[in-house]
Length: 447
Image (cartoon, rainbow, N blue to C red):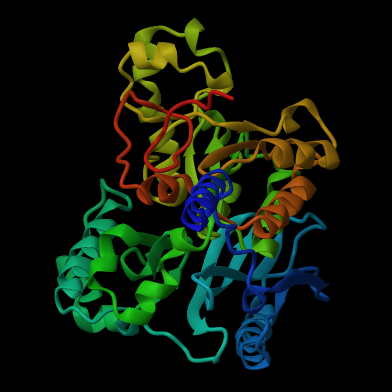
């Protein structure tokens, strides 16, 4: 009888575990960061925007803020006199990006972006990665204990550098130098939900350009070479659920900057699906999206119904979009979201893009309030979801802030679209449609 009761209890426990899986980790105390900014208008009417962080470790807080404050003090006096009162005139934005991985590691990227009439005229940046329980600084060489990894990283860096401004020749000696092991051991890098990103300034290859060159290495590809502590701190699927926060229809000169501020404040990375014919007028915002570490993708050339365009016109679209995108950020897009989700004409025309749909619509495009948007997320959110938002809407900046905070409370790690699929080893294929990614399942949700 006792054995039978035990077996019944064990069966019930297994069934309960299957129905109610272990709760994902919520935001760790050591990962909590406050990130705010203050604007200062100088006597020549130029503007300094300085971000300031408060972290769980006073020593980290002091070091990161000292870098930012030092650059503001250094660059501020050099800003050109503003010719008018416009926000687009003469300014430096000293920004602090941060990201978390595992249960105790965090990365910070401090960047000072100098602009004049919205054109990027200079950019300084540096990175730091710490164990936020001990304050120990983590360097790239600390992540690995296998010699073979340096060959892999070198090849990936060289390929990544060559992918920027693909039509322009690069100095082979510079490529060799930047991708050498000696260079990489001291490389600027950050760690994210599902990727190690190695950062370069475009000026290292192109003296007149100041964009950040960001080369990702997804954890599944490099974890076999990692040291024990790095393995633990990059095993995010063991601790968190995942999703991708995405934004359509931009850029918007009014609301996209506010959405970017919300993402910087909360430490989240997102994916922006940009309308091609808006890139030229808002090149500075597309560049900021990229330089702030977000993924930038296509939302077709215009927001019209794809069914009303000819197959030849649709096939010409990637060339038009990428011409403008390369002018802005140096690289072509990797995937597309069709306006309204009307992808069948694109697939029939064999345009050749991968198509990213969504599995959770916030309906912010209807002008819904932040509370209504958040209610949709709370009711519908599931592991592996792709969340649809629109960075042109007035309530979306605040909705973004609250969505990210809710995701953290519920044990989610927001990823870029690239990371979401890479975590399961899903390779995005041309003329294929994807709705989400959970355990490799990319199909439409049935509920």
